[in-house]
Amino acid sequence: MPTAYDATFLQALAGAFFFGTFLNLLRYVFMAGTAYTVFHKWLPQRLAHRMVPGTPRKAAQNRRDIAYSMSSMFIFGATLLAMVYAIKAGWTQMYMDFDERGWGWWLASLPIMLVLHDTWFYWTHRLMHHKKLFRAFHKVHHLSRDPTPLTSYAFHPLEAVVEAGIGPVIIFLLPVHHSAMLVFITIQFAQNVMGHLGYEIYPSWFVKSPLRYIFNTTTHHHQHHQTFNHNYGLYFNVWDRLMGTNHPDYETALAKNTAAPLLPASPREGGGTGHRVAA
Ligand SMILES: [Zn+2]
Ligand SMILES: [Zn+2]
Image 1 (spheres, helix red, strand yellow):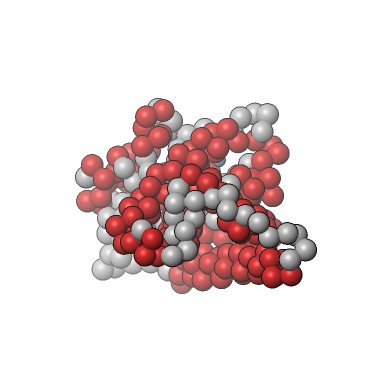
Image 2 (cartoon, protein in one colour):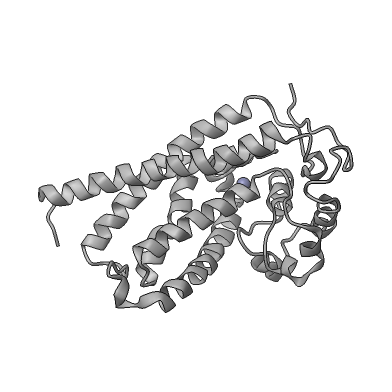
């Protein structure tokens, strides 16, 4: 194992920190920033019929969400530093040579990581809602009752550590290629942005199909921000169904929010004003 005094090793750790922080910043700006601009700035009236109803947000919400998201990015950078240390020390199962396991395992590792993360997220999320932990860990994220994509990384630093924890859990448990890990992290952020989108994008046929038993929606996570005590899952609706924690009105709300087509011929077709910000 390299020593702490090895200059190359220290450079690799510093590189991991800056790469991790910068990559998360890029993701936030391009994915969350684009979704926010399109849905909340360009098309709010056109998409008013798809707006997930909720408490109007205060104008200060965006500034708070962005500030906490920045602090989360440094914590994610520090987590990558710790992961690179563990990888170089030979403690993890991550592999670098793609040919070691080939395409079959590379593709299979993606859904396995998603299921593992969904389980991690559901149970840590429920734990952080415990009255003894909520204030210290999770209250910051719930300050945004009416979330937007900018809320996606808005965590208290303690919660950011918990959220980042899935990275070390995966590389200790699973042999994953670093490129598969990169794809997984991008999928998880896309899901996170969708959960906080504020507008329901699924077609109505989805809601009538059994797929609704499997995949989570914007309505699902938005309802969590409104009501606190239901809908804890991330990608899949499986843990919430198994544990009986889906909101009793979830399916009714989902059917209502997807009733009209996403982009109706006339902007007035779905009704609504598109205004959701309080003074
Ligand atoms: Zn949230
Ligand atoms: Zn919560």
